[in-house]
Amino acid sequence: MSLSRRGFIRSVSPGRSGPVSVELIAARGREAHVAESWPAYSQAAARPSGRAEIKISSNENPLGPGKTAVDALLGNFGQFGRYPFNSKPLDVDFEEAIAKKFGVKRANVVLGAGSGEILRNATRAFTSSTKALVTGECSFENCPRTAQQIGSPVKFIPLDSKLRLDVDAMAAAARGAGMVFFCNPNNPTATVHGASVVADFVRKIRQTSPETAILIDEAYFDYVTDPSYKTAVPLAMENPNVFVTRTFSKAYGMAGLRAGFAIGQAETIKKLALFKMPYNVSVPSQTAAIASLGDQAHIDAERKRNTDVRAFTVQTFESWGFKPTDSQGNFIFVDLKRPAKAFRDAVAAHGVAVGRDFPPYEKTHSRISIGTVEEMRQAVEVFKKVLTTTTTTSERGR
Ligand SMILES: Cc1ncc(COP(=O)(O)O)c(C=O)c1O
Image 1: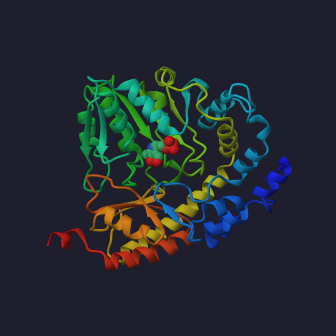
Image 2: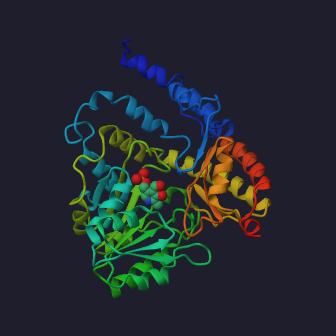
Image 3: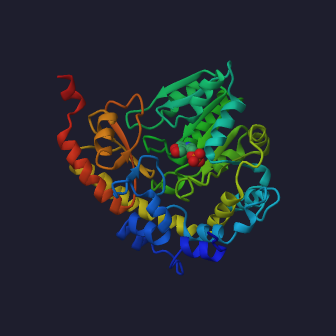
């Protein structure tokens, strides 16, 4: 069957003439949004039973990329046969667009196929059998997993009583280490440290262990509402071996497209770039990412949508007597007083997918990503049913 480009675009984007209203999406839910915008996807996503699964397990943006990004993609198919160094836009255009957005130079930017690639490359660049990785317990697993694969020791530092990274203990452990992974907001606990705490932390490590690299992961930057929080990009620009990672997988809604980057001093970035796969970001990814960098209104609307739905979800759990941490991401981490696996398996039977185990909290806490308001309304009905019919960890022990 032959399908013209115009026909293909019509088939994937009927009625996408005006801007997509966030309020409309939030009110009507993801199913309506997806069905209207991408009917082919909507059919493929349906489960055999005909009931769509609610995927609130991987901290994705449930609405996907914004209209500006989708329009840029749809208008650029002619370039997708080219390599990223030979296409329009070029990979260097993407680096320039990031540099411009952050007021830095292109030499201060390195691209990744998602920020996950940079976390991996950083662990390879800065840790070794004699240079440990320092990370929170628990925090995002990419760096410690890579360290273990390449034989670098890992110092796991327990979190504080509010399930935040323990800055003093991490700074003390950093002495002589190869790299500190500082995840802010921290996945899975969704907690943050404010700008002055992060600045003190960096200053302390720079004084006591100047060779130690500090990776400040800001994957969930766009979802933070705590007013004390600020980006650490200026710190990265002021200090050698300090760098910030960002991703297009979260608020930008492009987890499947794979684009991320790091910012730091040129010498630091050079060390990371040594480990980068050539042409790691695809032409479709850089097309969509460049377009979305110019659409701050979409990110602001996405933050507001997430904040509202997060508040609804948090309040619902609190009304049942379960207290989530102070969530600053597009997910919550909540003490359900029962094993994450038991809860996960029970809600999965009702078509709801929630997060994996996060040791050492897997006996009590679950991570739940924030979907659309409609998804969360349906999900909390399932949670209520499951929480009233499964036993708590302490009841199990009796
Ligand atoms: C804290 C954190 N950093 C980095 C990543 C990697 O994301 P990506 O490789 O999609 O950019 C994730 C993914 O969930 C994350 O939670």
